[in-house]
Length: 212
Image (tube, rainbow, N blue to C red):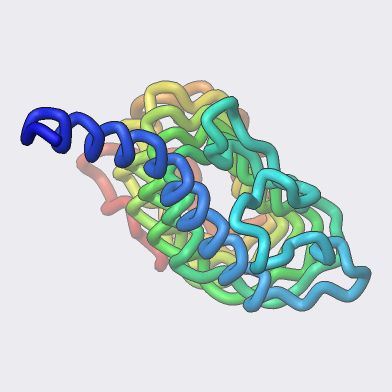
């Protein structure tokens, strides 16, 4: 076989297997998530690690290229914690984990999910700070973290999220002041209630983490 034909065949081979490699890495990430979760009602029973393609699993949606774009585990009676592996779901657009009993810190690696449009994690027991890495989620439109146990201040880096339409951190233990720049100028005060926040930020008068 001529050298050019060998190169052409090799490139064709790579193009054929690249979706499989991608799907397998996403399957590994989801399997790692399952290992961290306590699944009292077996909603994750179909998440079989021996099946390379996670697109066949319940609560997982893929696009036409077999990339995982949606994870629907809202109100699923699961507990446990999240790990950094979720950041490997590069094509994820919707992360729905609301109304469960998931605890621990929110992994900063979620900031790697550049395609994310919606993150609903309200009604759990997440603690610690809101990751500053969320400022990298430029496609994000909906961020609901209400009814958790989050502490610290609202990261000022989030004011750069120009596409953000809904932001709810009510019923946590956040402190400091409320941002007023960027999309934060449009959010109602109900989105921030039942925290230790000191009201809208007064620029130049007090630091944003005043009272923390």
